Structure formats: structure tokens, C-alpha cells
Amino acid sequence: MKYLLNIEWLKYKHYKPFWLLTGLYALSIVVINYIVFKINAFIHTEESSPQLEMLIGKSAMAFPYVWESVSYASSFILSILGLLVILVTTNEYTFKTHRQNIIDGFSREQFITSKIISAVILSIVSTLIVTVTAIVAGLAEVNSSFTLSGSISILYFFIQTLSYTMLALLIATFFRRGAIAIGIYLLYIWMIEPLIMVGLWRIEFPYAAYLPIQSADDLISFPSFDNIKKFGPSLGQVPSVFFVPLIYVGLMVYFTYKRFVKSDL
Image (cartoon, rainbow, N blue to C red; front, side, top):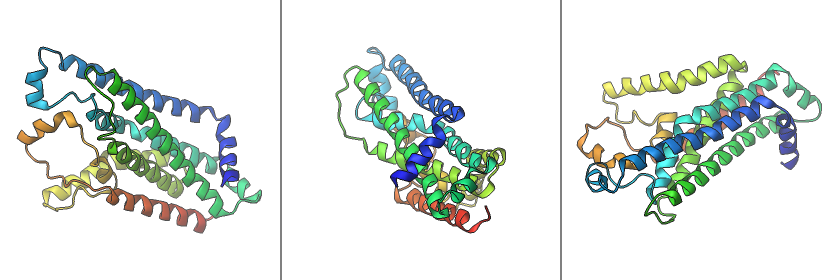
């Protein structure tokens, strides 16, 4: 296992687009949550706080709500992490390095396992960045004391991240060409799955929200809007439980593995 990770590290060590996109993703997490923090501070002033709390609830960036708030805000840019997985995977096919690795002694199983592990590591790193961001934001909030209550949202974010990275790896393994894989990935996330879900809602299908990405997205909501939701119309979404997206992640890993092992190099 250590040997596989060392080989992967050597591939990325001098690959500037990888580090550029990784840095952009990490910076985006900080920036988007900073914006949310400033907006939240503007809304929850000493004068307006009691009235607003009756309408939309407590400050979203105070403990324990900050765990869920930061996870929710950060989830909007998870597609960038998926693009990163597609980039590093399809480059293997573009430059034929996957063939060279196998010629050098890798088995097919070892090669695709290294890609799966890399996607998991990216998900872990992403979750760590979100965790640190949540802690900093919560401690910076006035009248907020550190607590682990509500930190289950960090686990949900990790599961959500796995859903995006494994879907990206699956698509990259099936289509192999970077531009095509990126197009299909973004098209599925932003258009195909939402259209399918809307269509299922229209026919009143009770499990419309249990699609691969939607089931992961539904794990986390923005707590500051909880009171508003009580007065708003229901969208018909069925609250996801964490094992539903995990099942999809398992299936994505399985089909990715089978695709690479059985296909021509």
C-alpha cells in the first residue's frame, strides 16, 4: 500500500495543474465560508438578533450550528474536487502512463486501487479543511463556545465528498478523455440528475430524493433556515440517511474497479 501511494505522489509532485486546482479548491472553501460569516455577522447584530432568531433561528456560524453551516456552504464547490479527480485520472490515459505502470510491474488491480485510494485521500483532506474552517469560524463568532455537538455534519460532509469523487473517478474510468469526462460529470450533477428528480416528483414517486448525488446532498442542510422551512411549502424531498449514499459509493467503486480490470489498456 505504501509503495502505491509513493508512486501516486511522484506523479503529482511536479504536476502544476493538480496543485493549482487543489489550492483553488482549498481557497474556495475559505472564501465562501468567510462570505457566509460576514453576511451572518451583518444580519445578527445586537439590535436585530432577537427578531431574526424568531424568524430564521440562531446564528448559523456559532457552535453547534457552525459544523453544519460550514459543511453546507462548502458542499457547493465539491464539483471542483470531482474535476481534480477527473484531471489526474484521464491524464493517465492521455499520456499512456497507466500502460507504463503495468509494464513496470503494477497489476491492473493495484493501479486502479491506487486511484481509488487517491480519491479517498482527497476526500479526507477536503474534510479536514472544512473541519478547521468550522472551528475557526465558530471561535471567531461572538458568544460562541466550542462544542463537538453537531459535528456529525463533518462525517456527513465526508460521505458527500466521497460521492462526488467516486462519481468523478467512475466517469473518468469509463470515458477516459478529459474533456468528455468533465462534460458528462458536470452535465450529470447540474442537469441530468436534477431533471430526473423533478420528473419523479411530478409523478409523485416517493423516493425521488434517493438519487446518487441528491441523497448525499440531502445529508446536510443550512440550519439558519430551519424556522423558515416550517412556513414554506414542502419540496417533497425525502430526508436521506447516511447509508444510502454509502451504498452508491460502494457501487461506484465496484464498477470503477471492474471497468478498468476488464477493459483494454
